[in-house]
Length: 324
Image (cartoon, rainbow, N blue to C red; front, side, top):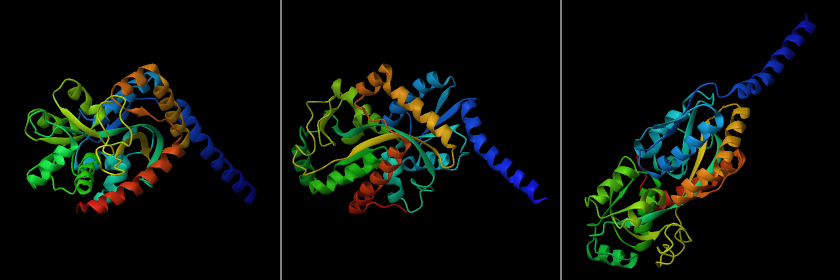
């Protein structure tokens, strides 16, 4: 009998090793959902849809984009964290949800380190400080002077409370020694729509979402939030050049799956993602929108998520904008 039990245990172990590999070999067998936790029109949608289209082609199964906005991106992010870890529900990871949300909200409903299996990084892009053409400020210095002369009368729009564009605005106000009013929207797209309509004077928006309107003269860019100028907006100075010390607020995108997703599936998705990022089509799409491609391994992305969360949590605390 003991010998028989040993054989049973061995069989269970072997099946446990074979099952994930077999699952990956047959994966995907149906459509995959890529959750983008913001409204359509923002940078996450621009990046996510470019990746989804190419990965659909490479995998031979449709990658369907599902925009689920709410609570600074934490609604859609939490939904993916609680999803079945079978590789059929993925998340467009983003600085706002994986690095800012966990510090901004006391209970966002997920842990960026424990509740996700990182697949790989996609790239990064700085925010841009953009104003309506009717706004009197032509430079960051002009804006700071105007805000000091009109305390608490200048509002800025963001993709929502707790998003990177929100915390960047608070970061800017603190660095400049001014007070700004914050108007949260359900994504960058709605915020830019109101800015274009002249309903708000300024906004912080990712370059992938703002540059077309800047190029068309519908918005005026005063600065970019990276430490180097953007190749897409080379004439626009950095915040550092505008006199704000070591100001740096770049945004990063990547793919994650729910924790517990079989490693062979994660590896297959990472390989597909990297092949998508290496394609001329995706390089052109993301490059045209100001996103610098930075592929890597799942371990690379896990390490970055940890580092990015530590950085932004300090900014959240310093800004004093924690939410209940």
